[in-house]
Length: 520
Image: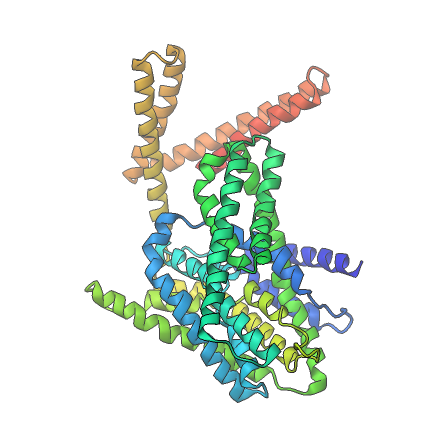
């Protein structure tokens, strides 16, 4: 029962924080971590300890899936080289340097210090995506940081498993064993993800029931994760591969109405899970610190130094690579994009899941020494990363001047609307020539398309009058919809129509009103 109470309290806390973050224009993940820290520090709040399965199995798959669905093949092809260098080289460098720093500042032996480094080596796709949603980053930069955070997990998980074997059994691993582990983790994860994506695609093409399709979409990330983990492969990689494949096929798999429903359902699920997990990061840290107090081991200064070390290693890795790439293109080196990419490497849910999954005992059955300190340091670094980098990333983007101008997005939107309207007009002309549609229908559709083309051309020329006309149109049409809704309910009250008809007609009107909001 205590777990249910905690979840309900977290949902209420997350809702309040989300509203506050929107009003303050602040990053919700960072505010959630701070709110969790404040609540967890209160003496009357019970201790909160998160089971590893809650994060890794319940929370992580759908959040990873949502982040992966946003990536397209074309965008990934454009950034695969820098992503590969960051996802492999930077992860290894971060793990090694953090291990050295932790061993020097704490009582951790080198094996446990390296284990801490592997936990914190990779950036987190959930945190990066959540922080990036509110920033108008250029498409290439957004894809780069998001793809890196998704694909560096295979490297970090491989290092993590090696480190766990070393600390639990006190034995090393041969290069051949390491290579085999990497193939099993990465290759097995890719294969499991591709298999699940293929199966889900076949099922969804043959499903037209909105409820069934929603259920299938919700269980897809869990199916990929469990299949890979059962095969001792990377569940995280499997979920990401499934998400990228399904996301690129989504328009061909379902209808418009079902896509609207899935977007609403997944939006709610993601909000709840993100809110709970980010609040839990802050909420459980005071509990972990109190558990460490008996040993009187210093943690605050080492955690701050490790957090700074992660940023320093990232800066030292990103800036030279960016300068080399700019030099090859014949461009002058600039600091703006490398600075934003360096600062966008927040830690979050994936490192937390790894830290909590560290075994409690060794192969000999004895308690794993220094485990509590490693978990405290990892959680503290995650909290520092989400708060410091989260609150300062937006000002850095503004100072760098690389954020996308809203007017550029408006022009892009206007161009897309104009081109698709012209394509529809050309197709309508073909249908008229073939006499494949009644003349009345053709004329009605021609009026609609001509209106869209005219408004698109006005927007493309930057004519400001079209915005006034568009606003007037939306306001007038919304007023007419309100009159239609009122009449609909009067018909129902007089008993002329039934409940089902009311719901069906109301849905049509709701869809039209929502389309007005999107178009405006």
